[in-house]
Amino acid sequence: MGWYNKRLAKSIWVFHMSASPCNNCDIEILDLLTPKYDIERLGIKLVGSVRHADVILLSGVINQKVAPRVKKIYEQAAKPCFVVGVGTCPSGGCCFNDSYNIVEKREDVIPIDMYIPGCPPKPEAMIEGVAKLIGVLNG
Amino acid sequence: MKPEFVFYLLVFPGLLFTSVLGLLIGWVDRKVTARFTYRVGPPLFQNFNDFFKLLGKETIIVKEGVHSLFIVAPFIAFGVMVLISAIIGTALFYQYDLGADIIVVMYLLMIYSVMIILGGASTGNVYSSVGAGREIKLLLADELAFILICLVPIIKSGYQIKLDSILMAQVTNGAFIGSFSGLIAFIIGILCIQAKMALTPFSIPEAETELVEGPLMEYSGPPLAFWKLNQLMMYVAFPFLLILLFWGGFELIGIGILWAVLKYLSIVVLMIIIKNTNPRIRIDTALHFFWKIATPLAFIAIILAVFGY
Image 1 (cartoon, rainbow over the protein chains, first blue to last red):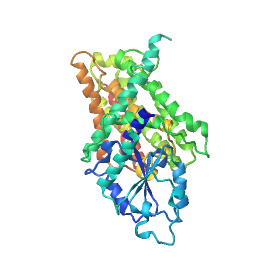
Image 2 (cartoon, rainbow over the protein chains, first blue to last red; image 1 turned 180 degrees about the vertical axis):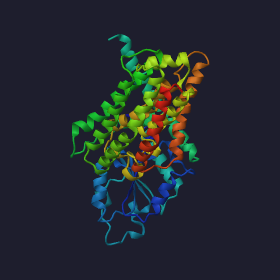
Image 3 (cartoon, chains in turn green, purple; image 1 turned 135 degrees about the vertical axis):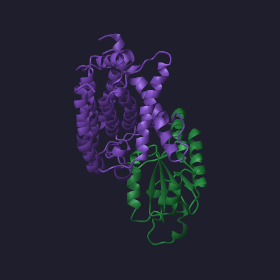
Image 4 (tube, rainbow over the protein chains, first blue to last red; image 1 turned 60 degrees about the vertical axis):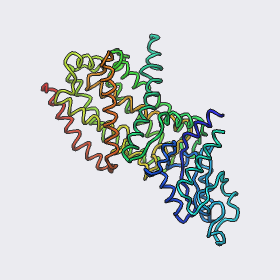
């Protein structure tokens, strides 16, 4: 599987899933595609359909309304598919942590493989997170 | 059937050559697109990595929908692309007739579009179905103009429909693009190809922002890998067809190799430039363009060709 993982590490297609975010992380994710950061040089491409995705970028606290949809979208993805939580929200809930409407156990909704904390994380931090994922895939 | 046929079909102008060249030209496409937006662009073997990665992914078969058609469509389309590239390639590189003529190429190209329509419509997904419907409309729009411009080299070569005869007529009398009718037909041909490959001014079926790749939306794993490969193989087959019909083919001796590469790359880069400098048009605009502008121009080209201009 080493050969295949190297291919996977060089061609990560990213699906961007907003699970009730404040939209701040989404803007920063789109920054990755701009000429300044140009994530396509690492082979990373933003795709529109989750069937094509290798990595799901999850942003936002998962509230009770989107939780079943997040779960459904994760089940629709072709495996192997990794989930990266972007921002503080997927890991700690950030300032929304005590809200009445967020789900208690996020790990029951979707298994998150990696967190990139920050509110929002800088694009450099996201690239570093992706590079760490590539490093894990390369072994 | 002769043993060379297997070589033609599977190795040199056929499967292996077209796939590898298509994946490399896909890199040119992405790189030039990236340079247009002041980006760096992907590394050279990016499309190979994408292809092999998709081969190893899980294939998800949609519960509602026609399963057999869903699986079979990309592979039939791949077979059709291999056949088209083998037919065009043997005529172009060996001046040899594989037993097929230009009419067969037209039919096979239509089968390819039909496979996109069937594959997209078989999923039952709304976006895929809308994409398949738009593919039908685009096929209706560009097919007439495409057939008409294919008639121009037939008329100019003295009513020959064999691909190698058309090429031989150009070798003896000069390339058809030098004449007035050939030039008009060549320009309309590039636009028709743009529509057949669903590149950006006519990327109506696969509109990424509204239909998320349209007919390909529900595909994953190896079938998606073959759809992507088919799209890249068209970057080889269509420019070769244009060079064969209008631009006098390749002369693969000495400096001719450089000219061959330049001819091919100029068509591909022209297509990429058109793709990157134009917005996507609506389906009614595309129909208007092909039926009211391109088709009458193609008719004029045919009339000019009949009178020998």
